[in-house]
Amino acid sequence: MASFEVKGGKKLQGTIVPQGAKNEALQIISAVLLTPESVTIENIPDILDVNLLIELLQDMGVKADRVDRQTCIFKADNVDVDYLSSEDFRKKGGRLRGSVMIAGPMLARFKKAFIPKPGGDKIGRRRLDTHIIGFEKLGARFDYHDELNYFQLSTSRLKGTFMLLDEPSVTGTANIVMAAVMAEGTTTIYNAACEPYVQQLCRMLNRMGAKISGIGSNMLVIEGVDALGGTTHRMLPDMIEVGSFIGLAAMTQSEILIKGAGVEHLGVIPEKFRQLGIRMDIKGDDIFIPSQEKYEISTFLDGSVLTVYDHPWPGFTPDLISIVLVVATQAVGSVLIHQKMFESRLFFVDKLIDMGAQIILCDPHRATVIGLGRKNQLRGITMSSPDIRAGQALLIAALSAEGKSVIQNIEQIDRGYQYIDQRLNSLGAEITRIP
Ligand SMILES: CC(=O)N[C@H]1[C@@H](OP(=O)(O)OP(=O)(O)OC[C@H]2O[C@@H](n3ccc(=O)[nH]c3=O)[C@H](O)[C@@H]2O)O[C@H](CO)[C@@H](O)[C@@H]1O
Ligand SMILES: C=C(OP(=O)(O)O)C(=O)O
Image (cartoon, rainbow, N blue to C red):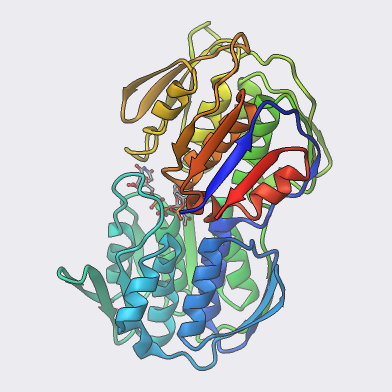
């Protein structure tokens, strides 16, 4: 388990460029399995989860030629379908959430798929029902192997149909879309997720020859085609990194320019940080956050305490709730943070409380933060990173704190943030990686 040693209390300054979006990358890289032709992908984040997925595809026989660290040409013209039933696939696939999205393209092109119990954050129950029921509606059969904890799926042919999803699952929608693009006839997916990740996937599939309409809405209509061809795709800037950098700047009183932030794809994210009192100037595709002595949380129009909660897109993403929570600890005013989707994502607040933050954990989903308004600084402590976003939130807390902090289990942070120590150190942070 590696750690970060962080010397806190320093103001940062400079320009930072967000990496390509992690959650988009996991969908897009899975989609290369849909064609035997070459697919060039640009702006790939160099992070643990994405590298693991690429490795998994290579184990399946997919050629992956790295042009540079961010660009890769994939060619899935000789896929070893049997590898999916191997012990090795179950082990490696089980290390990341994104591996689940290999199933949709495999069903579409090779008529069989295996889904190992996926990895990813341990942030509460994360079921796969939406994926499996969607595949079933398209005409796949499934067996659940209890002892080895994996789903086996097969079909003689997939056939388009209407389906109303139980919930707008992000990876579930992506998986079903990828299964449906080569199904016979028309598939309509209602209550579909419409996060920018899913929109980007649909646009890429259309460039490959798919016929998907309704992109960006909660109803996707997919006319099946016989085959898909190659394309080039560029990942959007990671909106979760952008939000994290806005929060980091405010919390550490830093002046930061986020260059190429993908402003038109950020939805309500800038507004949520503005509600915490954070000022920012949007200039073209860049976001400038000035150094702010104080930021004050607004109230609702009737004067009642602000609540920030997560919601499927175009609502506020659950992946930024931990960041909003940590930033609120130094604001003037109070806010109720409500993490509706996941039941184990707020437990890291005990570490913030140990650092001196004023937080009342009401229940597993809700925490009230009473901002310190910089009257007291947080104190550096030793802590462990429980999940990717809590890890980043703790790093922000440590950077703003007085004294030294040690963050253990930084593999969680490395899952989603590319060379984060080096990039923040180039803005003036003091983060040392202890292997
Ligand atoms: C690899 C990847 O892309 N991971 C993202 C993806 O995970 P993932 O696709 O796994 O998450 P889902 O969208 O399936 O659902 C997340 C959780 O929220 C619950 N749920 C979902 C929708 C809803 O309207 N109500 C509700 O309660 C589900 O039961 C589940 O427990 O989307 C999540 C929700 O944005 C993000 O946190 C993850 O970072
Ligand atoms: C929860 C997340 O990731 P994953 O779905 O890969 O666990 C996340 O990106 O915040």
